[in-house]
Length: 198
Picture 1 (cartoon, helix red, strand yellow):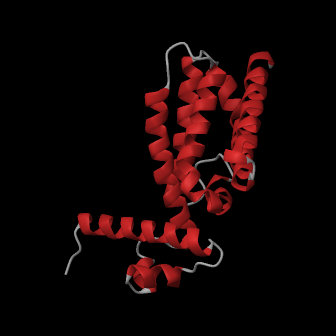
Picture 2: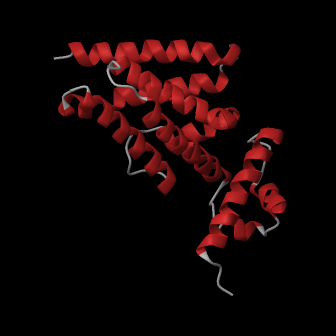
């Protein structure tokens, strides 16, 4: 019996929802693929048809959150914003969208975001990195930053971005205010460098 694309998508969504709950309730490290499969009501081998590892599940959860953030960012942008304001809004919108999976953001960083180069990792990893870089590239282009300058500074931006995410994952300040301060300083530093580097 063939499974329809719609049924596969429903199963995939169920796996993600149950995984998110298990990761939240029991911790990412303590949750196994077998635990996820049991809760979903499928054999472990069948779950591997959807995700090769629990890290891939976490990456898929992050990808969903970042897609929502991308749409929110587009809606919230306003005419006349500075480059710093646009970049801050872009990343802070992502942090808000990622909040439900904050406690297991580090496996996502290690598995999918450790490098800005789109050719490594899973399909979801590559998509996340590519979409992030393309969005920032578009923002910089709108602010008339030389595309050549941006292509040379992707690793610098990426290091700042991943650093903020990693810090945010462990930030115990109220509402992760320290992370927002770090984000603000990082963006100001990055933009100042873009503007002054010859």
